[in-house]
Figure 1 (cartoon, rainbow, N blue to C red):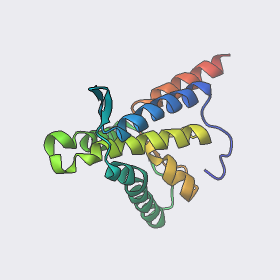
Figure 2 (cartoon, one colour):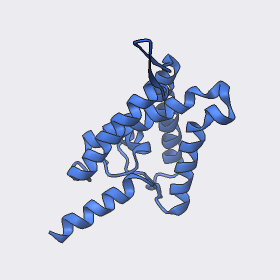
Figure 3 (tube, helix red, strand yellow):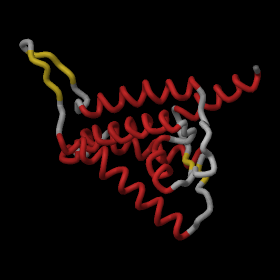
Figure 4 (cartoon, rainbow, N blue to C red):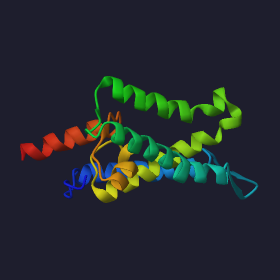
Length: 165
């Protein structure tokens, strides 16, 4: 990414990342709950969610990407159907832990915090790739890519709309 200092996304991609990032971050921090009972706001906030979402997941991905880059310094380009599917399966696997592994249910909110914070960083940097690699690409100054089911189509549409003008 060192060679790509200009923004890779426009106003629509930036706005989509900010809105979706804030929604995921807040929802993840609230543990997927926000209820008012007898005039008191109750959430499912757990500090472990914040720690795992902002530190453990990003550092794990950073370590994996760093090790991969040492083995194979070429740019990772997993943007096809398989790369996109793997990315979505990992997200769903982490998000659905309350249903299949209740003791690990904190990973559900942590995944949302991680993806939300990554989207906000991507919006700030103008990063056009999948948010899952925004933090590690920024730290490692790389431009590795994995498929993104949600924001990929937004960026594709915005790119084509801007080239029609």
